[in-house]
Image 1: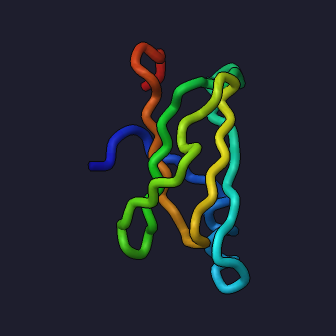
Image 2: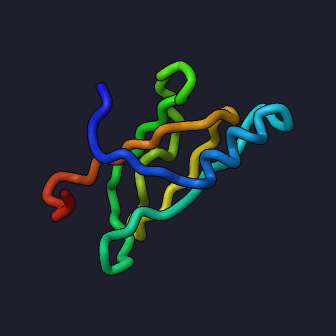
Length: 90
């Protein structure tokens, strides 16, 4: 089930364009609030656009400073994030 908020990331498009060049790629980033502060404990879900298949990489939850880093097959992804309970995000 897809839950949370949909996020667009240019890096995901670039990752998909590199599909013929690599069998895996690292996608990393940071989830922040409106003040630019990192948000800990955000769950990220990655869905392949062409098939709707969910990829479940390790490291798909943000650290204490809001950073994440995952290894995924090169594809174009829709990314959904679910903030931790009690987070003041809509």
